[in-house]
Image (tube, rainbow over all chains, first blue to last red; front, side):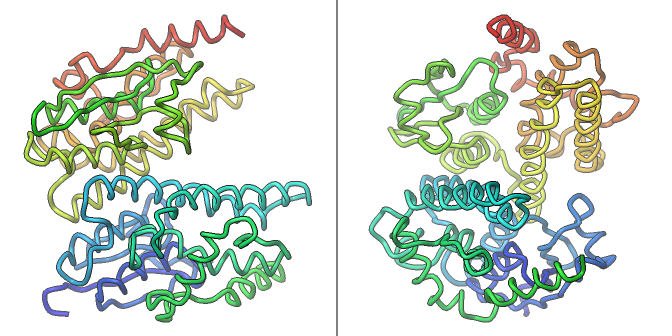
Length: 224
Length: 224
């Protein structure tokens, strides 16, 4: 890893945000050590590296921690700027648009679908399903450029920011018998999701697969 | 404005996020037209420019809208890269740390203090005051570098991201008789707040002042 420094990524089994950070590292071809965190028994390294949120992912570069997945992606893109294509668009306006949508996806998508699992009543659950589909419908606006990916002809920033959630959406669709990524409602998004799933970055072994999420919740419920 | 393009900023009277966008433009010395939005009767331009959130601020550069204040600041920094000092740190690691704290401040500070006004009971209000002070305590960690500003010796990214909220914190301290920026609890932050208030960017007329916020809520409550 000469010239790159020492790179560790602290992640956890099914964290979509850890998957996002790993996808960024994969896109840039960065060699890194993946350190699995047991979130029920957090390591001193995690607590010391992210004292504010105590959450994964944390990227540790030459001993210095970077927290929050979107900041990690931008950091990876800037440090390994000559390794592989730029993750963010290079044009300032396109970057701003990508950051807008990334902030939207990051802030809205996870709370919406995670709410499906947390819902106390069927009505609340239905509301959260509706909310998730509404967020996906909004994201379609960013896809309506006629290109195969958000970033254009190949996978970029917004593709991984949204794409890291697809295995959760699939797991939740199965677990609750609901259609979240549904070609009859959001055709462009469903087609993009299929393309993204076939892309190298999504099939490189950094995405745990929907089964792992289903298993995770089974264990969680048994432990209650 | 040759070489800069046409720049409009849609803002609203007391929006801290619009103040943030204006501070970025001021730091870079960008000439721009400030367009006041009546948030009770939003303009077609606003609705067309920010169809997702329908909120200010929106920066319109040569007819193309950029939404969300943090994305606007980065856009301004990138487009006017040779005009004045860089707003974000230039070192990738320092940029990542600044982005981490900006995300923290952006996500936590406003909901905490805005909750003081929204609280239904005194107990809830006290809880939100505590939460606001806790967020400020966390932000102190980013100040403990012995330098006068978050960014070092002069005002930068995190200074304006946090500093744009100071007139609200002052207004709320007065309105509810509570100490939010309190040297007895957060000495470093209180000293920074004083320094920031004396800085050129905070005294250039883009900060409405606490009186305007107090007035805004008075009118809002009369209208109920």
